[in-house]
Image (cartoon, rainbow, N blue to C red; front, top):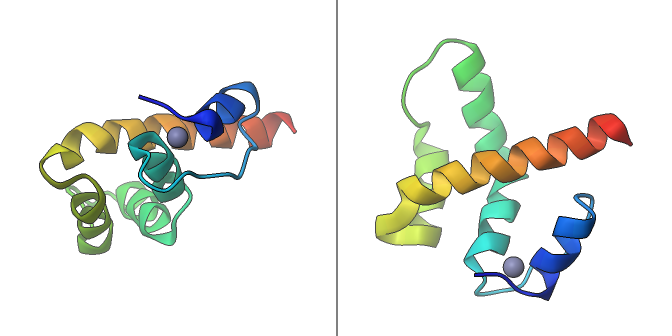
Length: 87
Ligand SMILES: [Zn+2]
């Protein structure tokens, strides 16, 4: 599932548009959120599991599918980070 903002993002990972109601856009926005950043920092410190703030953001957005979308969030974070390095 995707929308016109997802199509733009596929062509340009620096794209900053998000469509309300699009789950892929929501995953992209969480990938750039402080909650996800916290999760990365925790992981680097050797923590296991999900920081509560990040898990809550996933559950609020994706309900029962949050673990599936955690994978999507990581996927988008990787693409966004790669685009920054190449910019
Ligand atoms: Zn979208």
